[in-house]
Length: 173
Image (tube, rainbow, N blue to C red):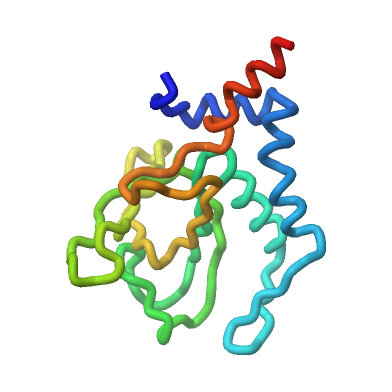
């Protein structure tokens, strides 16, 4: 039925094995980054080895899975489940791309008097190899969405979910 969401494993296989699906996911990110870009932090260029590849990866995964995140490994002396303290950042250790395969919602901001009410506060990093989970505060993640989120309590659907009937028609024509 149209309301059933595709599982991440199916979306991944669709992307890997269907050239039209892959083109749909790859084209917009490639065009966005084609002419290059620069990021400034406090009026200084932010330089990170492989940043272009990280951005391309997160943008493509956002289209495949509906959402993807850059997890900022900021060294601010705080635990990962605590909010990022911008004034205490001594450096950035890593920038990792995560998808809904890697993360799930753990808790949401509950104060109706705040602008972030109902938005995710903590995500759970699912690490199946060690059978443990780690909480990550939402301020340590930069979200990217392939389709607009209509409900903050679940990840938006994949762009492939939206165009799947057309993709099926194309392959049977």
